[in-house]
Image (tube, rainbow, N blue to C red; front, side, top):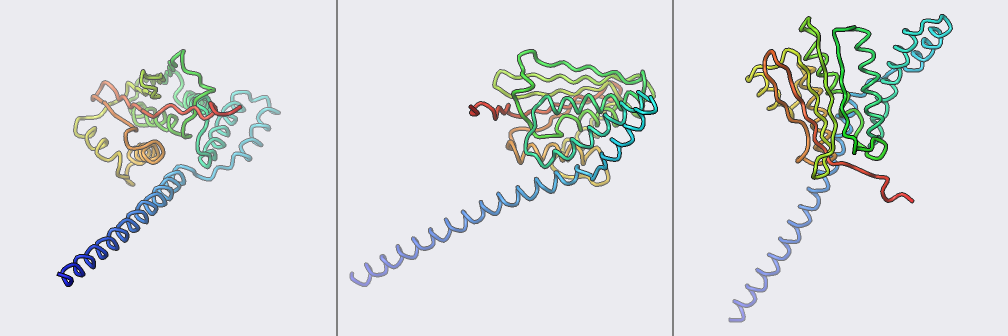
Length: 252
């Protein structure tokens, strides 16, 4: 019996040591996953953060002003603003009004390109304070860019991009971006949706949406992100869903 008790005690001790080892390994695994997610976030941000020479653009803008080329000056100023905003990728969050200002700059430049072919409408929930809530930078503007480049550029017809932003009943920020462009076939739509979490180097469309969706997953969690609906010849709707962040509530 003494021998059996000794074996039992030894077994308990080994089980305890094994449990502690497994717990330690689990803690190390969780920490490694956190570091990996942080590294992936930085990598994703670097992919859509090209090196812009906005100081040169500002100089050109000043020259245009001296030459009284008002339209050229405004175009360059808008482009410079876009470039400078890209550098904000190093910032974790920006106010919602900053993101929408950069959308306006982008649309202005595209309207200079497409002229009357491009129509843009923005509808904002009147109960949503744009100066109060914050989001990751470059979440909405790239979706607008996607709508213009993939929805309207090759249609040869008048296009309309509609941005609708509102606060849901469960305190989520919803951004709907609709374009009346060429749309996607069911097969193409399924392929794009299937690759929202997988990069497609051969497709600018895939890379852009992949970056947005994964940045949202890494920062807000996998419950949030992009959803897509599309019909050939009718258009495409891309919806961004994220939690509302008010990081100023605790400030004195």
